[in-house]
Length: 116
Length: 113
Image (tube, chains in turn blue, red):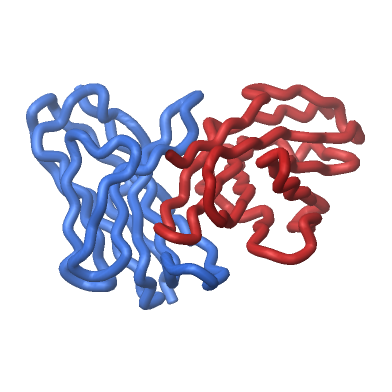
């Protein structure tokens, strides 16, 4: 298994540009999520999905869109990038969001994004 | 709303010193608790987790944590730190109802040789 993969590893954007950060997992995990990591603020949840076709907002959803058309993929879209979105983005997945399942989240290697 | 607070933002210790990093959470329902570590230039790795049972959990590399439900706390401990423990440590809480995993702001640990 490749685990959780993210592309690209690095990206530089100009203000106003759009882009999609890709996330894929091959573990048949139901639950996937996106975080951004900023110094002194830890990891903040952007959006998450409990299964194909279902998404919901996290702590900091503004400026980001997601979709979950398949179990494997959970892309994160920036429609109009802003300097405040300069960050490191992590995708994560786990088997279940439900009660009683003792599942750990697996994290991807991250995408480092710079918005000029 | 679910939230996590880590009290120490930056900790500096000498090798062989004991470590305790505080973590408190706010959530009324059933939770799962985690500590993750991020070594310089690397992504997150799971140190230990608590789901149920014995509130004292042991993780990798000699780390342990104790869940005290009455205090909404899940503090991380290690009796004797090593230089290689220099890293950023994150406490995280997941609601067992929604599955949302929320992180604290992190604690940077610097161990001096």
